[in-house]
Image (cartoon, rainbow, N blue to C red; front, side, top):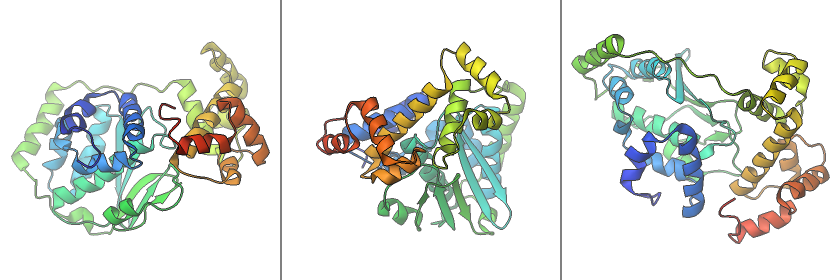
Length: 313
């Protein structure tokens, strides 16, 4: 396969990893293989039957809209880490979100799933479906022609959601994998024999990190704003973070440091743009912070990155 990973690892083993381990594995593998599109490449050859029950209850539905509605329903019931939300207004839409992950950072994981979702829609209908829109939350510098060719249109990065949109009639397409007997059997088995697992709440630190990331590029990160986003007061947020042994300022600094390195690894980026993405008004402030985080200026870091000096970063 193009990703260079063994086929056994790309299906059974990977699907059985915890979601955070999956994302970290993809990041490490992408660095080792020098494959900036590993998540995308992996999705093209992944055997989604390895997902088990949820794959078969989706694949056996009658129409594409029903299949996606089933995936939305059962991903919530089974507490799956990848959550899908489908809708039909002017057309068929499919939105992806990820429990316990930040789509701004975990790009290989999110590219795997949005590509895999399109691939399954095509496989289930035996149609070369072209979305009317394809957007992703994380940023990439420049265009990604290989992904654009597969999706049949330009994939837009830096958007508000990981989202696929299709024309109005796509949802009515019949599935070539439709099996009414299997579908009813699986639904009965789930309703009779399975315990519904409620989603585990995210840690406060993770929710703060996620809220900070969403606001950074707009320069609106304050403890009052983040507390409001989380439905609490700044005083309560400060107290609860202290109980976890962290402070708001340390979390903000950590998010900026992590994002800075990720953006640098994604491709060459000008300092003014990087400063804006991290919520700094002046590039000089970013340069000082970056040297504190890494011991190097952004220019020095980028130079060594191109020379392969940060494979384990």
